[in-house]
Amino acid sequence: MKKFVNDPKDYVAEMLEGLALANPDTLKYVPEYNLIMRADSPQENKVSIVQGSGSGHEPSHVMTVGKGMLDAACPGDVFSAPPADFVYETVKLVASPKGVLLLVNNYTGDRMAFEMAQELSEADGVTVRTLFIDDDVAVQDSTYTVGRRGVAGNFFVMKAVGAAAERGADLDEVYRIGEKVNSVTRTMGMALTACTPPAKGSPLFDLPEDAVEMGVGIHGEPGRKREKLQSADAMVRELVSADVDDLPFSSGDRVALMVNGLGGTPIGELYLVYGLAHKQLAERGIEVRRSYVGEYCTSLDMAGASVTLVRLDDEIFDLLTDPAEIPIRVF
Image 1: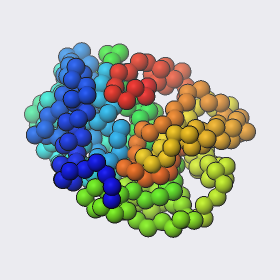
Image 2 (image 1 turned 180 degrees about the vertical axis):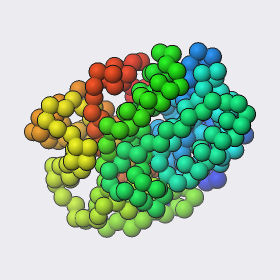
Image 3 (image 1 turned 60 degrees about the vertical axis):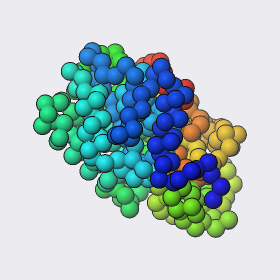
Image 4 (image 1 turned 45 degrees about the horizontal axis):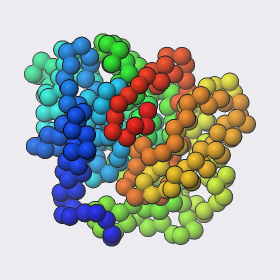
């Protein structure tokens, strides 16, 4: 393994420290609870938005903290849920009179940590609601989940609820918007290679040179099937079809299209995938109104990509176009 790592157990802390040092005017790092928060949080006139998950998926979620998106992110170790008491302390630090919305990708460990944190926070008199994100169409259940997984589509939920909160919406309204966006968001991903966690020092799973994992999870969980490497057009068509057929999307729909890199795929290849997906959607009469290409929810250094579709209406479109100020400048 060749990585910029000192002691693997310090990997997340050193990453978070670097992130805060690079953004001293807007972000605050709280090492005792392993969290990143907005320097100006909490604000009395807005709902606070918190998300967290295992590390290793950056820029999700610590690099999406800022005006118009998250108020705080509470990550765990690589591919591990954060401790419930860390989530609880995060909620206390950003608690607003208008309440706190917890966004949780649908993994068993994350659900347990955030549900317990909600109970503890409510016992302290904090108003909290929790929204589970489950956009992955690859499998119904996996090693880590009960039900569908939350993957790159979580960005659209973060963006929409963050925009609504900045506009001054109350907690029930912010929750409604998040639930609505989640309900019309679908993602399908695939891996070309495995990833290498720093603490393990070797690839997480074996994938032959001539094979791909179709429907892979962002922690390396098995997908729908392992198949032979095909042409880019054929593989993208499989990803697009999985999304379109699941909702289903129909001719005349307006959508946001995201091609998300899993950490080890060159940006040129991601734009190639985007172009193929865009044309395949046009063949179906589906109009792309918002475009996103890059790394949004990764799996360390895994080569691969996911395709996310969001069915747009005027409300969702407007929220996605609101400004946001976050370190990675993707929105």
